[in-house]
Amino acid sequence: MCGIVGLYIKNKDQRSRLGQLFRPMLSEMTDRGPDSAGIAVYREDSSTDGKLTLYHDNPDFHWHVIADEMESALKTPVTEERIASHAILRAATDPSKMREWIDKTHPEIRVMSAGRVLEIYKEVGLADAVMERFGVPQMAGSHAVGHTRMATESAVTTEGAHPFNTGNDLCLVHNGSLSNHNRLREWLRDKRGIPFKTENDTEVAAGYLTWRLNEGASIKEALEAGIKDLDGFYTFAVGTADGFSVLRDPIACKPAVIAETDDWVAMSSEFRALADLPGVDKATIWEPKPGTVYTWGTA
Amino acid sequence: MGDRVTMEILDLGKDDLRTINRRLQKRDGEDNVSDFEVINPKGSHALACGLMHPINVTIKGHTGYYCAGMNKEANITVEGNAGPGVAENMMSGKVHIKGNASQYAGATSHGGLLVIDGDASSRCGISLKGCDIVVKGSIGHLAAFMAQAGHLVVCGDTGADLGDSIYEAEIFVKGKVESLGTDCEEKEMNDERRAVLADLLNKAGADDDPADFRCYGSGRNLYHFKIDNAGSY
Image 1 (cartoon, rainbow over the protein chains, first blue to last red):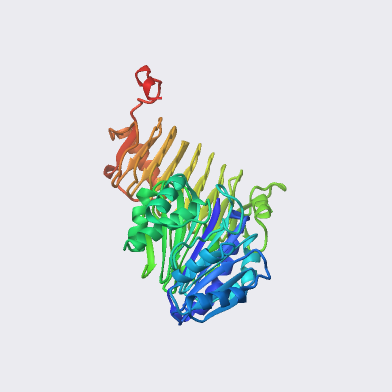
Image 2: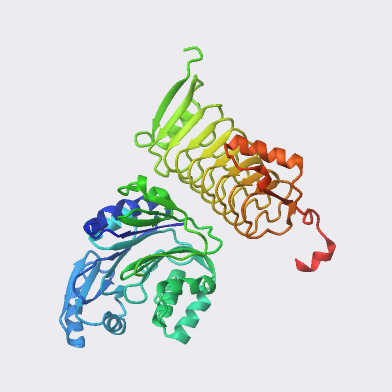
């Protein structure tokens, strides 16, 4: 079991309330996954800077030193912002270059996310405490995806927490378990050059989508191809820079429910996570069909 | 007090689930309250489970996992959608979902009537043991898997593998069947079956014409181990 939630705010006037609406959704899913919690927020920054969310297990880690080093290496100004155990580094450059530099120069630092709008925060512990630590309830943005984890196939660590980000501004959360992840990871790493950081099955699914997107597929096409290539049980919620998608495997044992109004669309493992959203009593509510890709925004 | 019928409102916004289920089960002594309304369910789990008296319960909103499980005698209405496993293992009484139902609605139920006004998703009525289920909308895949007794009526369409490995339950479908499961086959729609179907549609308040339905049941080929198949195991 795990809990997943996603909220995409269609009405731009309400995007300042993203974190406030999202917090009770993830909080309600705590008992589906008390091991760790993670949140991916699409912040709609007006700048086109590249941005990394980074994690180090030393809470007093010298992020300013890293920012200075990156600045001289990439020859562009880099700013840093410490947020609890995480930090955000921003620079007017390609986020892939920033990620590459960190991975090569500072393998002790974990890149939680890379992109232009995406930030990912994740920690071991209960959802409320994790959200509080990173100030999620105060965050504004277009959409957010969250996960509460009950670990099954790999260790309870910050690295093993969802969401997973493998390509710029892409994130994936997953309820279920994949059975062909070892062989697929090997193939993606050895034949397609997709790097992996953990033994986690969900990271393989995220890497698979990144590979498909790099090949020119839309997220809808990438997910549709995934129905054939990913073996196992899953409900996925996927965030991209300007969109949000949901997919369940064809057997569809893992639960999911979607609610939509003119202002927002939300999905969750269970209705109770959606019960307090404004206007939910008038929302269109349905269970996503097995093996069917749903997308919103310009995903 | 005499025979006076009274109505009691139970608020899940105020009281916890165990308190409310305890009240609905009348575990602190019987009284003559025959009608209950449950407000603010907000998708909570295992609501109105294990009821044992002929009372009327109306739930005002959507419910989560396992609503109305193990029901005996009670008449339970959900004015919203029901989550996975609604009316699981019902013994008698009636459960009426006014919205849609999620996976394995009515699974393993022995008796009573489950009515779903909207759609039901996958595995509706799996291992059915004598309950009657009427779905006014459509249902998902693997419905009535290994169903042993009872009836499943679907006024809309069904997903794939309907009635896989079915024993003696009967399935009536008005719309399209995506595919039949192993050893499930179409049966002749005779007068006896039409009468059973008409009665179920009537009880469920559905005005569909029994003449528009087809009947499906067991081919009875999976009942016994066949030595010719030994190589397949």
